[in-house]
Image 1 (cartoon, rainbow, N blue to C red):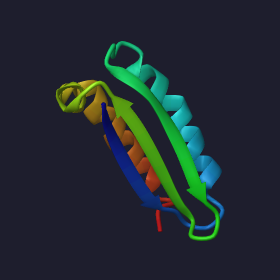
Image 2: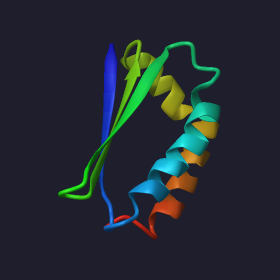
Image 3: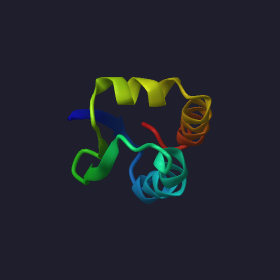
Length: 87
């Protein structure tokens, strides 16, 4: 198993926006990925830090997905959208 941990410091009060974007984009992104195991979102309200843990069968599975143009364009969209709520 390979777990990717992403931590993002959010501006106060913007957690739901970020969570909604993840929920909207992630299913399409991983629906055809047989080696994707799942993801968990954790939010620390005291520090406004959002943590996403994504599980993959192995490192190679994640690296293949990461090289996929669909993944890259989705990440670019999320990055652009996050500019309004990342601290």
